[in-house]
Amino acid sequence: MLSGWGRYPRTDCRVVAPRDEAEMRAALLSESSVIVRGNGRSYGDPALNPKATFSLRHMDRFKSFDPMSGLLETECGVLLQDIIETFLPRGWFIPVTPGTKFVTLGGMIAADVHGKNHHGAGSFGDHVESLELMLADARVLRCSNSENRELFDATRGGMGLTGIICSAVVRMLKVESAYIRQETVRTRDLVETMEAFEQSRGWTYTVAWIDSLATGRKLGRCILYRGEHARKCELPANKRGEPLAVARRRVKTIPFEFPRFVLNRVTVSLFNALYYSTATPGSAIVDYDTYFYPLDAIADWNRIYGPTGFLQYQCVLPAAASRSGLTEIMTRVARSGTASFLSVLKLLGPGRDMLSFPMEGYTLALDFPAKSASFMLLTELDSIVEAHGGRIYLAKDARMGATLLRQSYGGLDAFKSVRRSVDPSGKFTSLQSERLGL
Image (cartoon, rainbow, N blue to C red; front, side, top):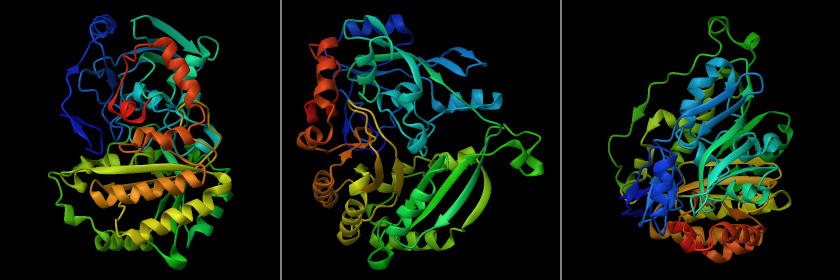
């Protein structure tokens, strides 16, 4: 039984785990329908295929690294955690990172993940120099901006539907330390929140926790965290001896599934009020793990939503419509009584075409327990997103309809054309692609 990180839906899948490219080629040729799975950190059903789900975690070898240019070539199954722990002590960090380090390189490319620095650095796919893609007929093509360009664009964000990413070359980022110079800003409402983001465009990283249940004058209040890679001279004296030390946090575990009644409007409201009031504005030096991956300190945190799992809803609204759209979404969520425990707001820069999610504007991520009231609420939020010209992130999606996909992704037809040209029989298929008519 497999699921995404949201633990909804769960499906009985036949798993194939090739250990190298030769095994993968042989397995691929014997299948009529298949999808690739990294480390299972997409939230919904994009990495589920009951007929054959290929797990590529065995394909996790580093192939080469150039310390002069920072170009890293590695197989697709390597974890981001392993990349960081191997290359950060050498002074190199990943140029764009999602909110967890327990994702694979192939998954990061397939979802074209974005981070807290999208407004300046773009998405992860913008830092991929080239990739090796195994097609449905087991041929391997090299894809880059100069070779098979359309296929390269379709694969970055293509959710594994163009082929299997065997390996990739990524441009790493040079850093002086493993620490972030963080500044914390507390805002009183959505107007202040958006003003704080706009005033922080000069910062490399910005992200906000936003109170999803605040209403009235407090609607949209947040804690904004902005950051820069700390230089060695900015570190406290006791950290300058090992400025590139890999973080070693004690990981706590959620040992069991929480009863569904634990997360409700009252408990989440109390948590939000406490979190907002205790966040201390000002500057601090924090390790990269604390800044980029706070939830990785809690193993199996997805269990807090109980046995039925949860839905993550992440949308992006274009810049001109963000204020009105966010106001409507936050108001509707606050009135619903369906509490979102984790609510995150980020500012995005210009995006790319095809199925890449980002567009210039604001992206909001919300979590809800997988129950009927949540499904009804999210259908209402879909209407708000559609009316404001926004879209839903496929890597987080478990229930969007095909109509919203067609109306919100302008590059959909171009993606389908490229996909048909390399996989005319539709061998690469997921539960998500079938649901959305991809």
